Length: 138
Image (cartoon, rainbow, N blue to C red):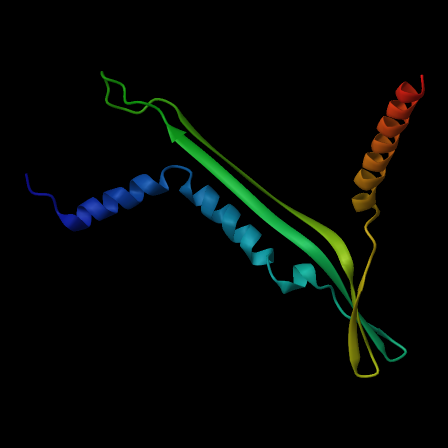
């Protein structure tokens, strides 16, 4: 049995692409186009000799899947198919770069959401300590 290597490679590439390979490639291309420095650094704003450049933390992610069912013994055709994909991006402000008088300085914007778990943990710990003291004093 002689198999042409070029035909084998072409068949393997076609099988790897499957019916949904173009979808995943298109999704990755669309997300990748927007993944650049401009997503993290906003447009500079200049007023009264001071330039401010906004800075954000940007996270990208995407995933996909697929599937093909088993071959039918009678017809030899595959039963079932599947595909799926999705992506997302999140951006949160970190601060800004202030350029003034030939100096650049990064100024962080406080993130209140980061403080909430600390406050909750401190409250819970205080409650446990007071509860323990109350039991000791009885």
